Image (cartoon, rainbow, N blue to C red; front, side, top):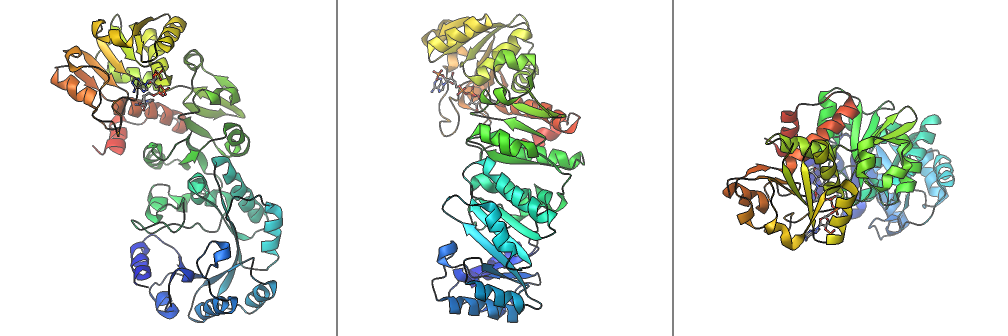
Length: 473
Ligand code: NAP
């Protein structure tokens, strides 16, 4: 009870309605709980079979819901698995207190969404609710289809895909005509996996402003929870007054994402491991992306998907903010996706590129493909260069004490580290001490995100604003 009062107080500002999970409290004083807020209350007493914790009899459970309706709950939530006679009775004798009929598929079992929709609507409840577990972003389309059908039949509906992969369903519900979403109080434990704090839903994702015309953008990848794009693109949409939202999509199965979810999107950023794989689903990619062999931005032109790569100019614009690369010797550490983009763009801008990689065969292959020079990892200290680029994850958290090269090599050079977590890596700290000019991974991130934003919004944002959004300074 005490915890419930604290949660109500914590969310009073952001919540429009409270759900009281009576099953999670021992001997709840229902009248006092309902009186603790002026907002409408949904009373729920979820039995174990539907993922709740209420283990008493059905009679006791329904008795608690009855009490809640007497004490002023605006809604009671009754599960489809309850005896049809009881549901019919609750629906028939409702007055002020409305009924939400709900169904939860918890264990990832297959389900027939049409049958569930029909069963829920046939109860005659005022609101229908369907929740299921999603393991991959494409599965959000089931929630969207459910809501679209409800909208076409003018029914109040809630559809939630649970789990991290389901967060888009919690954000985008209004776009598809959903009646409500569930959120957690700020700073308190989540009531369900994938829930987003109410304040974040309102201020970052601006869910109250979303509507069927809202354009949906996002970032696809796996893992995705570390991606900072939502904190950059959503505020930029807001200041550009663009009716758009940017979500994280946890994508494992790319073909299913492209088939079921991409039709709802207007553009998306691409991160590991899909930068190469996404190319086969696009109608066109620009020449640079083709040469690099990777795409990090996808935009819609009419019915076509177009891919491009903003990592490459993002990195070189960052380096050239400190020193021009034309006719300079640029030593690039790494032969993965980021290295490939940087090699290509550095050469475009007239640099002489050398590539060193832990696995020498990959350095050789990349050097051969790009007409650059390859260097063995143990020969780095005998290699001349003006500009050093780290395009490996060495130095990234939690290995922030590591650096790919010895400090003695950095005297008065230009040193760029693509790693942006931590913002100042050991390599960059060493470089500063050695009198080198340093370029951070954050500058590359900001530049590439600004180029993406220009494509999503139609004009380039100020880099100072981007820096503030990302670094808070
Ligand atoms: P990737 O395709 O997986 O390539 C990783 C490269 O790092 C490979 O060449 C690998 O060498 C090398 N490597 C991995 N662990 C190493 C170690 N312990 N010692 C030496 N070399 C090692 O990754 P990526 O996409 O190119 O990303 C590389 C880095 O750039 C990441 O830290 C990423 O966060 C960063 N990045 C930053 C931005 C930005 O906006 N700032 C954008 C993209 C990427 P092998 O071939 O021997 O495995």
